[in-house]
Structures are given as structure tokens and as C-alpha cells.
Length: 447
Image (tube, rainbow, N blue to C red; front, side, top):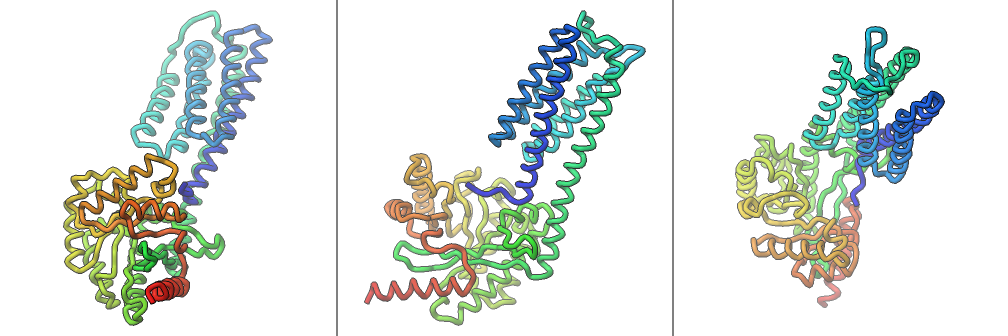
């Protein structure tokens, strides 16, 4: 299971905090008003408030189980239904006292904007839009259902002050949470800019090994050594780098450093055969002069283009496929090969796949992990291997951690591996030592 990025972890933490506070308020307000109206023998209102308290306990339980999405929709549905019911049945405005319970709908709207940040746009905007329309309707009209349950003005007058004050306090708290999240993301962005200037980023190398144990190359993996947070994994900053555009200078630096390393290895016989794979982001690849950037990096460093492989993600294929093909053809004319990373996790069409001038497919580690225990993952892995072979691509299995996984993949004609079974991502001296050790073993086996 992939570890969420640092900004995502902070966001999830704030969402859970919001849900805990919501659950507490639902229980407290529900029990409090249920008790108050029980004394006045307004049993319908008691039932509504008691249901609110019970659902608040459910929200707390779901939040504790980290089922935050379900917890939010339970909270949203319960509170929204209660507010609309109160506004139309119990809290109908008149000339003396305005309606006030509907102010809490603004809280729901702001909470929805925070919690549904990563949901599809149609869901986020439709939920928030529904809440805003409901607020406008309840604040601009005297709509209501005249029944015997209408709350008397001696209760509604202080209730107006209490509801409005609590709603404004809640708006302040939610706005504070959202501003804090923006400030935290901005601080991380500032640290990234400083990190680029201070050379805090560096590359690790993870070996790619054949079924015979020969190291044929490596994948260059970006890391960040933060002066305060220590070693920061790419999942903690890559998404933010994409959003802010910092992925462009970072990506350009990675390419230059990788090409420089290839040039260094070219002068060392034991490493001159090695290829180096570099991940390329969608934003990088979409640049009009991307091919020219690759050519300039190769010319500046003197690296052999045939030893450089660019790893593209499958999600890129939902964009302008013709432009992708043109750039890949131009890269191939330079001698640079392209690999499709994490294959099987995206939505690429097989029709697109056969158009792409690829050299390599990489089976995503999520399929390799359970290849021995999950028939579906085994079927996907074997299908990708067969597909790659039929299209003339080399197939690399990522995330290989056990001999059982390796043997299964070999039995299905996948002969290139990457994973902790062979080597974790390491710095250059350790990687070179691993290459020498594998060559020594290979030499002993053949002698």
C-alpha cells in the first residue's frame, strides 16, 4: 500500500479533526436540545435531536475507524436534513423573529469544500452548490409548514442569538483550518525552492537485474534531505512540485545529473553497459521544447543516449496522444528509449499502446506484491507480460521482494526485475559495489 504524501497526511489529519469536532457537537447539541424540549414535552423535536446525537456517535465511530469519507457523508446527511426540517417546521420566521438555524448550512458548505477537496469536481461542486442554494432559499423566504410543533418566540429569540453566534464561531474555526492547510503547503513549497537552490535533492539508484542475476541498469529515484525534516520521500513532495511547477527545474536537474552519471560510467568498463531510467512527469513531457531539453542535456554531458531511458506514466495517455507519439519518435531518433511505468494502473487504450514507440513496459508493484496469493493480480501480471512480448517490448517487474514472486514471473517469461529482493535504492558507491559483486558471482558461475 502506498504511503500518502506529507501534504495529504496533513489534510487527512485536519479532516479527521473536523469530523471529531462535528461528532462532539452533534452529540452535545442533540442531547442538550433533546433534554430542553423533553421538559417542554415537544416530543417530535426530542426525536429529531435524539437522532442527531445517535448519528453523532456513529460519525465518531467511523472517524475512529478512519472511514472518513463515509463519516463525512453521514454527518452531512444527518445535519443537513435536521437543519432543513428545523427551518421549515420548527423555526419559521415571522415579523418579530428571523430564522436562524439555517446559518449552520454555511458551516456544512465550508466543511464540504475542505473534506471533498480531492473528490471529482462534479461531486464537490454539486454538494457545495446544493448547500448554498438551500441557504439562500431559507434565508430569503418565509417558507414553512405551519404545524403545532412551531417553536414559540420566547425560545426562538434567544435561540437566534445562540445559533448565529455559534455559526459564526464555527465559520471562524473552519476558515482557520483551511488557512492553516494553505500556509503549510506554502511553507513546504518555499522549503522546496530553497532546497533546489541549496542542492538538498539527490538521486538514489535501484538496480534492474536479469533472471541470471546480471545488473543491466538502474532507476534513478529522487530524494530530498530536508534540514529539519530529514530524509523526505518523493511521495511527500512530488504532487506539490507538480502543482507549483517546481517539477520542471527538479526534472531538469534529475536529467542532467543522470546524464552526468552515465558519462562517468562510460569511462569505467565494469559499468559502461549500464542503462539509467529517469521518471518524467506529465508536466515536463508536455513542454514544447522537451525533446530539445533532452538533446541539450545529452550534448552538454556527453552521455550515450542509448543508455538513457525515460519512464512515462500511463496517465499521460489520456492527453494528446499524437503529441506524445511525435515526441517519443523524436526521442527515439536521438537514441533515447521510452518505458511505460506502472502499467495496468491507468486507463490507457490498447489502441494507443500499439501506436507508442516504446522499448519497455513495467508491471506495477501493486500487481507483483500479491501475484502468489491473488488470482486477479496473477492474471493481470501474466497478461501484461504476454502483451509486452507480443508487441516487442521488454517487460520489467517492479517491487519484486521474494524468490516466489521472482520464480513465478520467470515461469511466465518475465526476465527483468527491480525490487528489494535484489537491492533497495542506494547511493552511487553502494550501487557500484552491488554491480561489482553481481559480476563476481556471474564470473564464478561461468568459470
